[in-house]
Image 1 (spheres, helix red, strand yellow):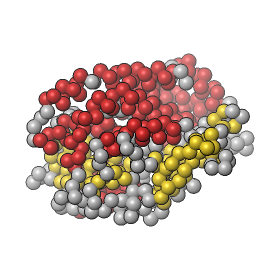
Image 2 (cartoon, helix red, strand yellow):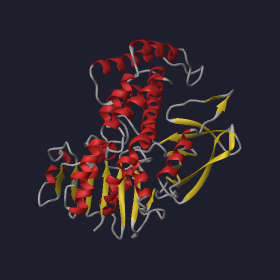
Image 3 (cartoon, rainbow, N blue to C red):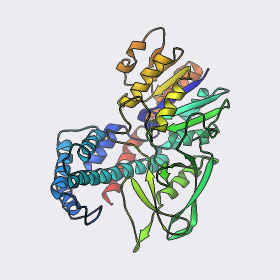
Image 4 (tube, rainbow, N blue to C red):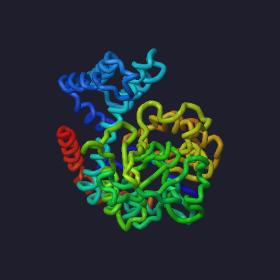
Length: 421
């Protein structure tokens, strides 16, 4: 039987990463009336594109006003606010200076969100990962003699950490290698990455495991350590040939230091990052994390740059069972492909694992017959253990509950660190 996993934020919750509500709270709490006014004025004086392509100060102020209005309204999903900015950066604004202003704001908030998640990844690994890691040991039960596809909507590295620590084969499907210096100030200190050419990339790529025990991992919404380079033609990842999660975590911290310095200061950008090539010259890589309201197009036809969705559709067409863990069914481009796969692949069955979901989501209700869709009210760790033993492990549940308070400590540390920036 061919198994697959679709992972949402709930999968990483017990390892310390935030759900959308918590991340939104941390994000919005950064901005007070005083900081909003000060930052808005500073941004209005900048020329992020060129002197010949000025931004509109009124649009900058309007964007910040929209942020504060969203905060006052009690907004709980930062992506809804970012989607509003995306709309204004496109056809929602009539002039180029206005569109550029909103695009500049989106880049700024993108960098803030990415920084928050980077901090959560670093602190949660140090504080909670090792304490709850063994509760996920039944991850191995998803492996069969053939490859197991993992389709992740998360940006974090927790699945990779678990696979390395439990000795489970894992690949991003990359088949080539590159290296970068940490910066133009540290040319001899190198970061090794693997990569895939995006053109023609599919589930049949030779870098993926085929009829071999192990995990093929696709980060559908990008990842904290995943990036593109060379005009978006190459998709790069940190090397996974590590003996344990600790070494991969150390590589991740080194990757976060990648920069290009000018006059002693790193050049800061938004989704793009200024880095150095091997010769010390300025270069650009692009973070792969997708957020906001336009992660992908709204149709089932795959467009350029949507190779991951093509892989998703191809994988779903060949699965017997898909286990969905911790996904809130808030992304239509995912929901549409799940529904389409259930229609085209009559052998496909879906198990939805979520301690808070009480019903079958609308996109799958028409397939709620003959056991094709099932639910389990459990967390990721609890379900995997039950799946292996057919017994609810009370000791495991006790351990997870006892460590729950550490999530508060992680959040406090992240918030304190952000205020020092």
